[in-house]
Image (cartoon, rainbow, N blue to C red; front, side, top):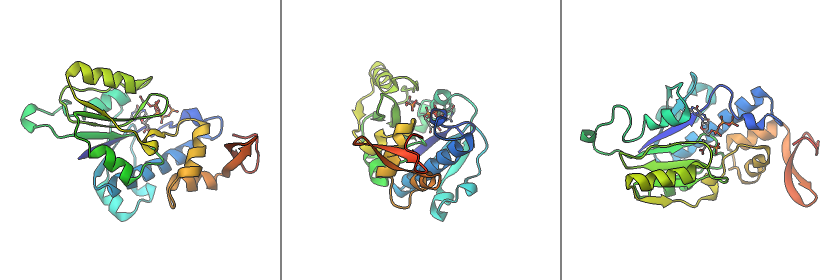
Length: 230
Ligand SMILES: Nc1nc2c(ncn2[C@@H]2O[C@H](COP(=O)(O)OP(=O)(O)OP(=O)(O)O)[C@@H](O)[C@H]2O)c(=O)[nH]1
Ligand SMILES: C[C@H](OP(=O)(O)O)C(=O)O
């Protein structure tokens, strides 16, 4: 299946600016992208990164199998427009082509695993959505020519509505790993707790000095032992 991985390459993860510098945010975003690409390839698919700026996959130091399976295409349009162009009813897709399903997997799903992705990709509904905590759409599969995305805000609810409007069957995939996108400082806890052994994102955060911290019985992250930092 075609698996599109949108990537904001230029100023990623601005909502982490209270805890990470711009260069660090780029490094964490690239580490999460590498983890997502490994998970997609581990699930048996070839990811296509749709990047807002040129991106050399060689610089991500991916395993050979992932490097040969993944590709990058540049698209400076908004997230919604760039994804819609690649859905079954998008530019250059005609009914004569038949309906090739398309999956869209966000690049900030640091906990994604091949198993979690396979569960999403194995669905058969016209539209299958793995919602994010907070109402976003972290990953989806589209098998209907009239379905379009409209990201941001509570896009999960908007996408349910769009599926209904175009007469597409819908399935919601309940997955902790796919529901966890890394947007805000509190999300870094999930990376350190649940990141897979050998994954890039937890390694990157640990190299930057982040660790789990106990804050009055609640788990949080601290940086370089500074329990007020994050
Ligand atoms: N191709 C493309 N990908 C995007 C764009 N905006 C966001 N993304 C990607 O879409 C996914 C979800 O992004 P968000 O969490 O909403 O945005 P972000 O830029 O990563 O982070 P914030 O700056 O904190 O909003 C991530 O994989 C981003 O890399 C865009 O305009 N174009
Ligand atoms: C792209 C957006 O992501 P979020 O801002 O919720 O991380 C969404 O899922 O609609």
